[in-house]
Amino acid sequence: MTTTPPTPTAQVFCIANQKGGVGKTTTAINLAAGLAIQGQRVLLVDLDPQGNATMGSGIDKSGLQGNLYQVLIGEATIAQTRVRSESGGYDVLPANRELSGAEIDLVDMQEREQQLKAALREVGGEYDFVLIDCPPTLSLLTLNGLAAAHGVIIPMQCEYFALEGLSDLVNTIKRVHRNINPDLRIIGLLRVMYDPRMTLQQQVSAQLESHFGDKVFKSIVPRNVRLAEAPSYGMPGVVYDRNSRGAQAYVAFGAEMIERVKAL
Amino acid sequence: MDTLLRMAPDGQARAAQGRPAAVPAADAGAYDAAVADTAATDAVARAGAWLVEQAALNATSVREQLLYDGWLLRFAPGPSKRTRSVNLIGPCALPLPQRLERCRRLYAERGLPLIFRLTSLRDGPELDAQLHALGWPRHGQTRVMARALDADDTAQAPAQAPIEALAETPAAMPATAQIEAAAEAPAATPPGLRIHTLSARAFARALGALRASPAAHVRAHARRLLGLPAGILPLVLEQGPEQGGAPAAAGLAVVDGDVAGLFDIAVRDGLRRQGLGGQVTRALLAGAAARGARLAYLQVETDNDAARRLYASLGFQDIYTYWYRTAPAGGQAGTPAPPPRG
Picture (cartoon, chains in turn cyan, purple):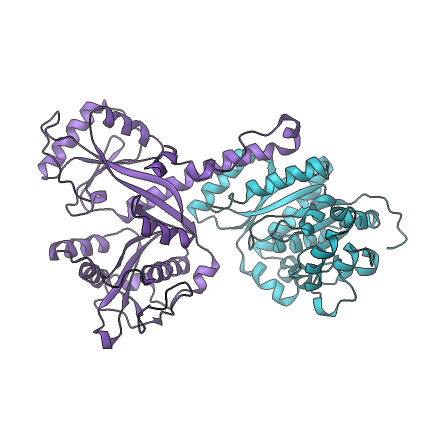
């Protein structure tokens, strides 16, 4: 892997939403696994100090040699830090509680919001996709993610108040686009935890389609207990129960992303 | 009344706040989503508010009602205007004077005043303006507030009998969960309060005791609850045996698919301002979430500041408004003046 020339071919996407508990980490893990199943080389960056994406990929966050923190403050490279998710078939740049300290350490650094982007440059040629699981806060960590990305994937539930945080997120993306990263764009909204029996969810889903058009992904991830169970087995849902409706939705979403990237 | 003015007539007050009016042209390519975002938020707010309005009409449905040219006429005598008023639910074809004349006749035949319940949704404001022009006085401004329900709400649910089993259960269900004094409740919360799920009849009795309602109203309320086309979760907060086991507070959730309405939240005189209303409301939210509701709404009069503060503290936001207009005294068709009830 380390001998591959550093051509920046990887498409880098943030999975972001300023609400917590909307399925960001589930989406990050399962999109990574869904892309890997389809032969894509994937690096999943866990930008959340809670380390849920790390654990959900089957990696013990307490036994790490290094983590994203060392990469962000320049003490280690991604090549030294990444770990293979054996269950998922992709690489993980892992996180644990130590990462929350990066907020403080980054403040005094030059180009503090560009650290992740700089680190990714060295491994860009080794991957087709880099997925960044952002924390639900607008922190310097999230800013590093947005600065490094080509686009943002926004998972959302079709709930009455689901769009409430979206304005803030869109405004943030706009600011990052203008000031830090002119490449950044919203790739699309992904409907997750969808229950078609719910009238309200159907209505919200229809409104999203009519107002956001092709910015709404065609794939819809249903509310699915197998997806919820999978992290406790240290496996992406896509691997844990490949035949579940949730797994199939994420594989389909992976295929949709591969198509979208061709059009970018 | 300044809060009233801030509510846009189409129910978009919430959606319109703090959003960019327009996106600079330079950003349009990458950020057309920003414009769609505002429009979609408004559209979701409107669609969701209309779903809530439908659920609220279901939750307050009455035995005798009539659908007439886009209007839903309801004829349940009693203290509550929402069950004896005309609601706009669809497009109308006939001329307004003809429609009003028939309504006057139908309500007069039943000895009821002709009252319209008007909302800030859809064509409500237009009909409101027409009735205003005819000199119909406006009263009873009410806000509909809503909040999302999630897994955290479910986790707080007291164990309860299935909703279907409740409607005909004659007596109080066994005590199911000790209410724990909520963190924000003042220390004065009486100890030993227990929460029960009740049958519709027992709930109506408990609510009647809290509100000192006449027996006829209690019976009518129980009958209406039993006839509802939605699941009901009637709760009462009861004092311990040492206080005589009397109801201290009560509240009702009506679960209509993924939307749950909270109604009849009442606290006994002398036990107010001790956090009991909040405890009942939280228990109702938990029960509704456990039954699959994803959105909870309630109706609160605009000038009821204490209740509005309580519900706002529990995460409820304004989503739309309704109010009443009553045919003027000695009006065009000689309709009798309505009693000015609250």
